[in-house]
Image (tube, rainbow, N blue to C red; front, side):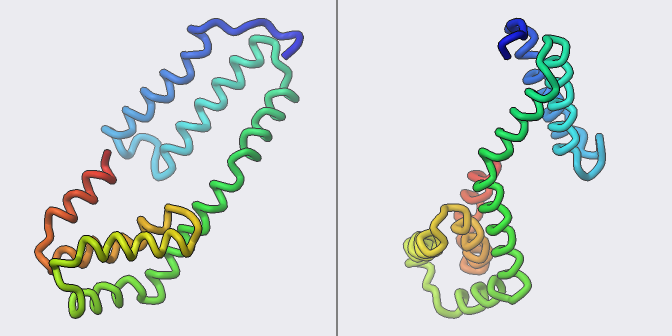
Length: 163
């Protein structure tokens, strides 16, 4: 950016405000742009930021280089999310989640349910090496809390997920 001029605060905040407004609008109007609304919203914002960069004399080569560096820096988290999704899909297809619910109803006493939930999610996280699979392993435990009449547990998990 040696030959480009400085961008004003208003110009730099505009794409952020636009992104937030489009995301808020999407929350209340789910069918706005179809199935991939969030993706399209992010792409529109990236396009607007690129156009602002071109108007402020930033070269296309520099814009593409910054995009490449940004995507490259988040390569590992993207791979982790893909692997966690594969893990959840594998568990669902192979019947691990229904088996956990079935055996859990037969063997878990409601008085030890919460400490056991802690132990199970900790073991899954330590085994996988990341925190994300603990959410995957919590799914059967949430399903198991309903027949054990632990509705407060399910409500707490849903509140945590929504906020």
